[in-house]
Amino acid sequence: MARKLNFSSGPAALPEAVLKRAQGALLDLDGSGIGILEHSHRGPEFLRVLERTEAAIREVGKIEDDFAVLFVTAGATHHFSLVPRSFLGPEETADYCHTGVWSGKAMDEARRIGNVHVACTGEPGFAAVPSAFAWSAAPRYVHYTSNETIFGTQWQAPPPAPALLVCDASSDLFSRPLVLANHALVYAGAQKNLGPSGISLVIARRDFLETGRADLPPLEQYKTYASERSLYNTPNTFGVYMIGEVVAWIQGEGGLEEMAARNARKAALLYDFLDQSRAFRAHAEPGSRSLMNVTFRGATKAIEETLLSRAEERGLSGLRGHRSVGGMRASIYNAFPEAGVRQLVELLDEIERELP
Image (cartoon, rainbow, N blue to C red; front, side, top):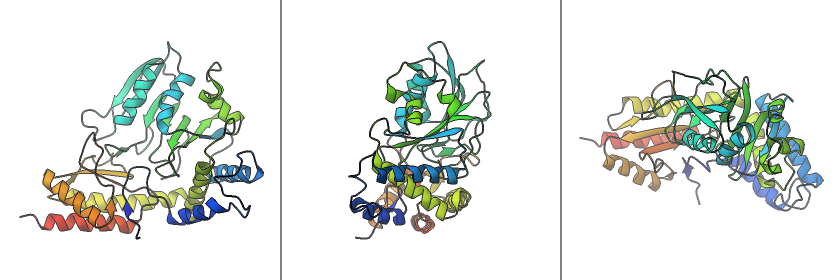
């Protein structure tokens, strides 16, 4: 059966070369005679996978040893509560940049622990990242979501915060060169650009981790993952393997600079069409547009349904927008091919040409 073009926001398209290597590893990991799903997490075969995965992450991201690289068996939503539980006292304040649904959920969790100050917001409409800031007097940290998958906006550079940054980079980590300056902790669910669901990658300053609470259960302390090499309990071994293979693929394709160039080129194809179209329009404003998730609407509901129906018929899957906002969303992460974006543009143009 021919593979479809997967525009899903996540779990998302993975490099086919990686999927083919994973097929083999399911039966036989590195000539060991045992598949990756069956190996002990403390055996030498998996430890080699863990070591090469971390090494690849450090190489492609240019990450020095003062940052820990952690693998947490949970999605990014888990970190919405884990971060404030670890680092925010009940009398302390954390500043949050509000750019959409996911930052809103992160704020909700932080309010259970301490004080939340909304330092900037993309409301109403969340069509642009904020440009005006009102920081609190002494924030414990500043949290932002680098790419908003639902509304299709993306920070082009980190916010100019007066404190260390915590970043939810779930949908754009390793899609462009990594910026760690002034960052205390970066977390990302793997299922966008890095691998399967059910595992998240954390990159965190070691000295920041040491400031976390010590009275929490071990798996609620980031420093447990750092001190135990993410092996305090049985990790998602297949997830670690897949992240390593995807990051190695990124490096083999030219690294993060090449990913950034490809992603900008792919996104431009679609945005350029939308900006001149009579039938469709982009949601996000220029200067704030995501290169990962292009959100757009049709002139009428009927046009939107026509697009979605024909797209599925032609193997263009996953274009329906998030249930909370509707419309369409084309998620074009690292592994999504440029030719697939061109096919979508051709279909949009076809529908537009049929208008009276």
